[in-house]
Image 1 (tube, helix red, strand yellow):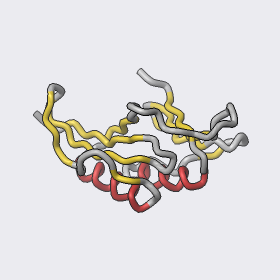
Image 2: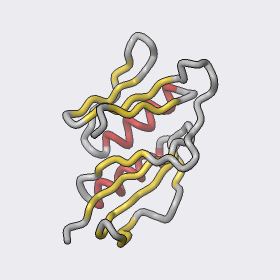
Image 3: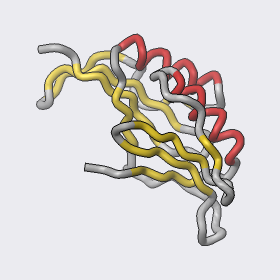
Image 4: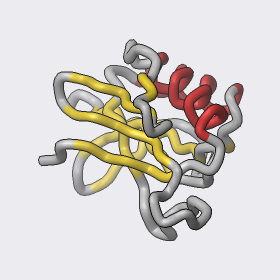
Length: 127
């Protein structure tokens, strides 16, 4: 459904370190910086990117917005969460764990990145 997601960052170096660590927990290589100072994480299923806002205003998080990353396992979600906390992220929501709902059992872990963007690692538990 999505070709890419780009989030704003005020400190590209801090955000790159955070995403290199968290996405690295899923086996995704370090981001690549282009000549405009944007950082791209390329995968076969999509692109995640970081950029200073082009309007020159400070980056800010979207209230009510969450970006979800597919985690291959609960252990990977935990590694993602730990890497994020160790690299400038802050935990939010409930602690990582299984939550049951209309979409079945999900293993969820939530963080805020250095710019305040809300993130989730999600693993769909077997039925």
